[in-house]
Length: 221
Ligand SMILES: [Cu+2]
Image 1 (cartoon, rainbow, N blue to C red):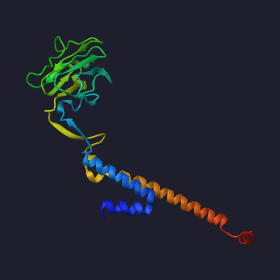
Image 2 (image 1 turned 30 degrees about the horizontal axis):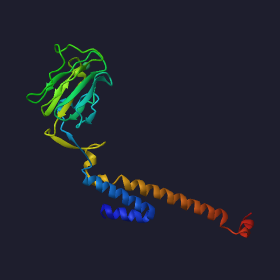
Image 3 (image 1 turned 90 degrees about the vertical axis):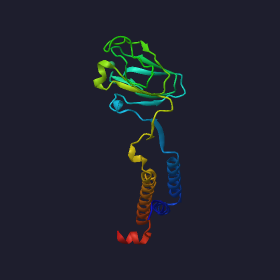
Image 4 (image 1 turned 45 degrees about the vertical axis):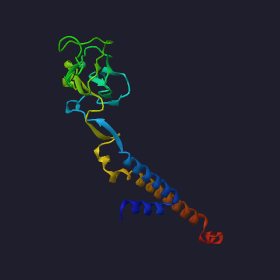
């Protein structure tokens, strides 16, 4: 028996209402499959795999975006990974002092020069560093004093960057279409089963308590 047959059987057994609910769940799952089930994201370099915070935002369509410096544990850039259009000004806002921004990698002609001063010169709280990234491609950067603590980030510029399909809010496991419809039916079937059990128990209880004739009851006492 394939999954659809099982859904029909389970739905039929559990009653019309839940059959409709199971059906709706299956349709929703099917639509999600057709839509890709997730979103396309830039393929982030392994350099930022262990970056603190690790958040990502698609900020294409903005001419200016903000990345906060010194967030979370104090050693993070937020959002850690952003996708922007070419020509976007990235405003690094130092919400905490004692950090800097230095380029790790960028496309030829990329405009990420890094904060002024030497490698370990830091920027005071409240200041900003605002490079405009005209050249499309992948940029990665770090805070020199805290690179070892995972204080790094990445900016993908333009639509020419290589991308990957990402399942929203889930791991690669959920990309398997066999798994996508499944979370719906155990839920409805399970709830229906419990309802049916309670109804049967109540019915039995009332039958036992009130089902007997007054005469029989008197006779037993
Ligand atoms: Cu730092």
